[in-house]
Length: 174
Image 1 (cartoon, one colour):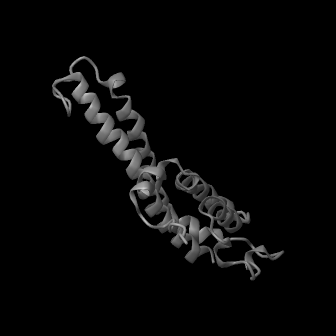
Image 2: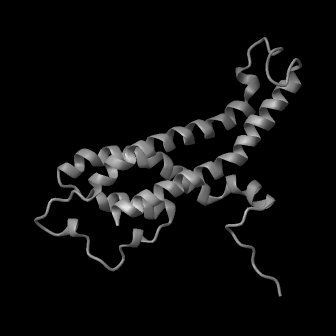
């Protein structure tokens, strides 16, 4: 009898398969959406909007969290007549992390098409380019190291960054 492979283990297949999974792209979407939502929640929380609920919903939707440990309890910020400022601490404290995560995610994923399409931006003089002095060598180097290399690396970088974001959200929104 064979057993199913552990989806959390790191094997060669997982390294190659990771850029093409829905989980990778949900995590990437969370990494990019957490910053604008967090910034929008700062003034909205002061006005009484249910920002903690919105932030927990983003975590649930994109990181697959189980309601960040709030399945049985009533959220005191959802009671009528009370100001809803539960999301304000998370929005304020997570903003630096969200900024760094969004920057690294955007930069890392943008390197992939930039290096695969290197000839489109190379110009006329490619003799000093990495992989040069030939055009084919420079393109191959950029495509393999910068394109395919970052394509295989970025899912794991995003996974690590969003794991930290999840822990922050769970501790501040629970």
